[in-house]
Length: 207
Image (cartoon, rainbow, N blue to C red):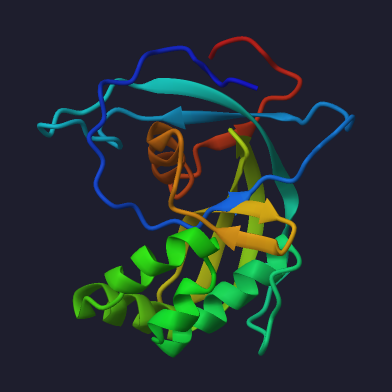
């Protein structure tokens, strides 16, 4: 379902954003999903040159869990479910092995991912972060253009809330960097850590 913007974003020129992508499950005749609203504040998303975007409200289909789903790092975690993919993500990134890290992604993206992790300035901070992660909580999902944007809070000495884009295939769930709409990732990456995503399933008026 196309998302609705109540105010228009300025043109975005986005750099590389840290995110994992999940392919959305096929919903078939399932009931309509709830609606969540992002309140993205001025200055959280930058255009090029560095001009703050307008305040915006954006609505997507999605789910916010009233009680987040706990995820623990598990040895040899599979990619047969969304939560297992996150457990596997923690495990593989902790190794610092570009081949293992790239295995999280869709097969046709792995060569590019492995090449990017040859850069120590990207590899070392990423490995250090995931090595200190003690667990995570899956706080919800946003569904847009066949991608499930997982909202994951990683816990540790350094905690982070990250938007993890994911896709579903016949072989399981994988991360992806190939997004049809980068503005969606930018909006979520700005709103989620700032706790500006809320369930508005039963309230449709603009605030």
